[in-house]
Length: 435
Image (cartoon, rainbow, N blue to C red; front, side, top):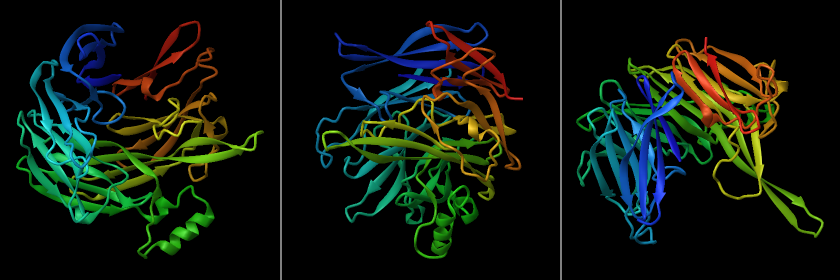
């Protein structure tokens, strides 16, 4: 497990090592220097006795950084003491670090509700060293609402209740600190499988909820790159109580700018099953993971929509495993920003190189080579252009393999670095100028 974070001109990599004899999880951090292309100042930052599991995602720890990169939050989740959700309360480990990766405070916190009554959704850290947890709470009458829990080396949190007009957020909601120290809460609301709109609110340093906004995604954006039949169905539903939205749109990124405007980025992801008859009269089940259209929206500091964009993508990977965990490390996308422009980098089918933005792209399958491609979205206007960077079969005369979106790093706002495998136990690093 590794996490990579940028601290102004420094990059730090976190990783864990299990000390089996002492039944301890050791958390290390090291600095990456791109000038020397080396690793420096490797050191132990925390020891965790006993078993832990990730609070969010697959890794045993998760890392969050404040807006000014002066504070970091490391979280982990203890294995439940009691297997019953009606009885057990999550125990979350929180370690707040300064910009030099020295611990400021460290504490294991018991959540205020049982697992049956709450879900942990997101975490964040502000520039003053306050740690936040966004949770979904279920009341005895089966109603749901969000709560923001604020901790500062304390067992009891300050709680801000977020009703959000009763909206549901099955498609993702998250936290991010702004320049002024306020916490922004934003995500996609909707019913069932569809994301219907964008939500944003601000929680100030006194725990007061303000500037709450709800923005439905326009029908013309929802209908982009879908069949005429689906467009007609959506048009009939519009204006009724039936849901109209983007199918299985998941929230991935929330970015808060210096001027208080925000950018929300997401991707369509879902899994389908395919049954194939076998020679013995039975069926083989294949699970197909679909990574499709990407969505971006920019909202001004006062909550008005500057622009919304949906850009087409069509990728898939097949597996025999029924695990809901995403597969295909060469699929999905990598989001980067220079401030003036935003980039969505992904691998595409060569047949889509000259395809117009309003047409449905041909599918690209995991492990089948492809072109490294990017959508470039202008921050001010929302104008979209498409860039084809290079063919994985010919990178300056070298065929490369094992493309992974997790191996793309943006050291500055002018370039990114990509690690690729060229066989014979050799990797290459490509430095690509975004201009």
